[in-house]
Length: 242
Image (tube, rainbow, N blue to C red; front, top):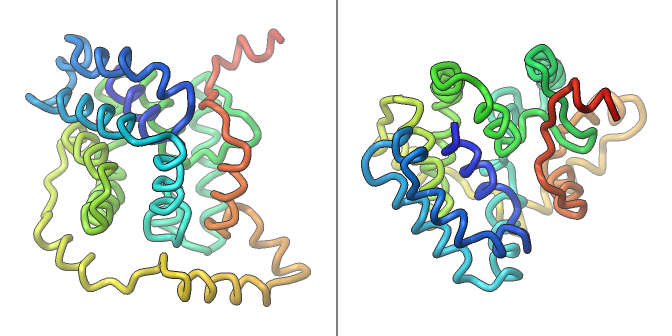
């Protein structure tokens, strides 16, 4: 699905390449191929997001991105953070998802976590449409929660989640979610972040080794952002040939 490929690019860390290709991405959002996949007007929503994003200086856009997605766990772009938290089930869930990718002929770079939403969307963009929509429906409760939290923080990225939810066909009780989110204690304040780091400091030895598989989302995202690269799902057969 062309629309999911586009959303994957837009939801990733803002890059120089994205800014350079903004005009082409805007045209793609309004193209017939994307329009055929979306509800009426959703292509324009994506085009407007591209304009709003790239009208912001790149360094400011990157700082905003880190502020929303790198501070605290509530807006983590790692799907299983919202399902399993720090439980050991999270590691197995990532292994299972990696196996799904591999079984369908795709390979991801070693630095990528399989449940990173832009990567997940790029995988879905290359699957049959009905299958992709079903996957989105399966995770729609997470997408809806992220949409509500982003709207609460007045982030334009909420629009991308709205489009994904439209693609999934899910029914979302937005008023109920908005009320729930409004009553949440923020986890992105400096005090909240200090508490997270204090908790991490007491983890050491075998416990730290057992819990190292992506559990410290703040540290993981900071590590990822320090080594920004394009999404790199590739055909497994082609990968083996190199």
